[in-house]
Length: 190
Image 1: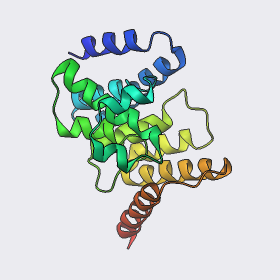
Image 2: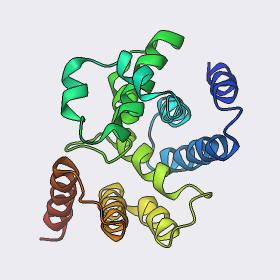
Image 3: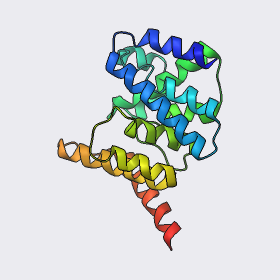
């Protein structure tokens, strides 16, 4: 099935070479992290390959696949829609309904409170795959080899810092998730 998914993603993103490189970078990174943390590599592979499947679909097309509550919840941050739309595409294209896989895709942009390790791996890999050139990418990957929660906190901090340098106020949900992982990590050291 993984080969069929690779083929489908490659066809969908064939005109977006950088995005395709990114998707396969996320895939390779996620598989490495899955091996280190003894996670289901098949689930990780599916989520990694499909996480940006709907990235270049029009907002109208993305919305057409979403429930009204999702549309309302993220009306101020429509960048999230592609993740939810990708889960619907995966369900329709491959009849995959595994909630852990779907949540890993759904929440790869900035995570959520109480993520599974597979969700964390996709969030982290999206930020630190080899084609990402920002300063913290290598550090995040090294941290992820040891502790997924600490790496999640670092991903979120880097994302929030980036938004702030662009004059963009992070979403309230994004800040809540960041604070949650700060507290999780603080609890590990107490």
